[in-house]
Image (cartoon, rainbow, N blue to C red; front, side):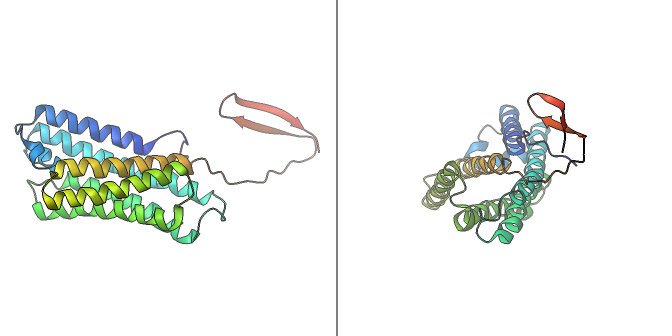
Amino acid sequence: MNWHPRIPFVLLAAFVLCAAILAAALTTADPRWWLSCFSRLGAMRDGSSALFNVGAITAGAMIALSAVPVSLGLRGASPAIFRARTRVLTLVPLLIATLGASLIMVGVLPLSLSVFAHERAANGALASSAGLLLVHSLYLRGLSRALDRIATGAVVVLVLGIAGLITGVLTLTVFEAMAFGSVITWLHVLEMRVKRFTRAVPTGFSANSQQKLLSPIWGTRYSGVTV
């Protein structure tokens, strides 16, 4: 399967989730849902909740899908770029897929169906996000200045958000928006960054052969190559 390098899977996932949240918030039977958490939007057992849950499932699937092009990009990078290359190639795609799977389960198992299972899914998303930031700190620092800044900001947001939850300054809804927003921003930048890596593939030419050259801008053209 070919993965088009210009498809921003994570950005599309964020757009779908935000659209689902907005649609559910505008149609929910509980106007005070924001005092609880975003998952409250999916617990009404009505069409509004279906919008939220389907949006969470779709967004989760897109995030999980993004693990494939990210993995391919990482594998195409020079071995000198990463420390502990084997760990990076294993942990980053795995944590991205786990984050997506957790978001899928948030939609599949709403609060109205099982509070315990839903909370485990939400905790899985938080743990996966923290794991990605930890992997960045250990192995990916220096890959991109923008990525480093976003990762640092995301860590600050998570720490301050948890402190705000414990002290009662922030509601869970605000914490979820801050935490997921910062992590999804980091993941989007990572996806776009690693797609720039290309694996050098040697090309052989036969005598008086014609080589097809593909250009993403100018299309397909042919040039004669004589060896």
